[in-house]
Image (cartoon, rainbow, N blue to C red; front, side, top):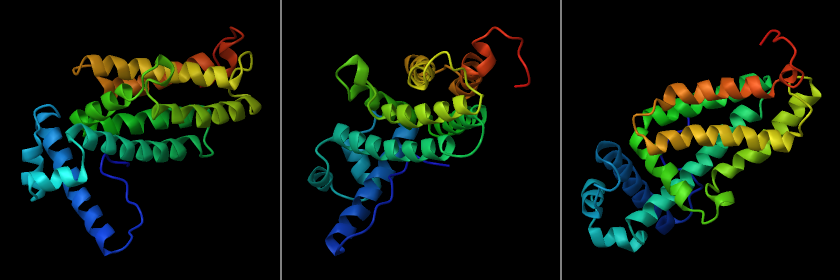
Length: 217
């Protein structure tokens, strides 16, 4: 299961390895503190103390606490892309792929509730226009479109709308579910994300376009 820990990258020379080791300690300290008390209540001094570095050292590597969150968000985006490729690039049916992605994402969010909220809020803040309000999540559109187009060819997905439009509608429904959780921390996201995926399937499956009686799902 992807985690909210930093993505592992190839190591370089000794100085680079030390920099990465320090960054890893800082990120892990931040994730633990945020999970315990939230991002706003976590201070640079607390992060430095847990990471066993001086606050000045923190600022030698990160511009600010918000800058660190932006870097963590970029790492998480890479992990999400891996999750997307894992579920939307396999050989299962469209329904299996959609519902598997939703379940996996719900499990990941449930395991890291506070950190996940901060990361997703950072994703939303990182865009200035409505159409790019969540640029990292936009990486879903291409694999979704490809998956739905293949589903149309196999007769699983409705063909009265093109795959690109259907992918937009799928993203819209998932985004609405996540937005509810971001605005209300008590929202049951672990239950609603998989439920949203099942609802989406009912809207895009082949016989939903004709009004035919539902067959085997």
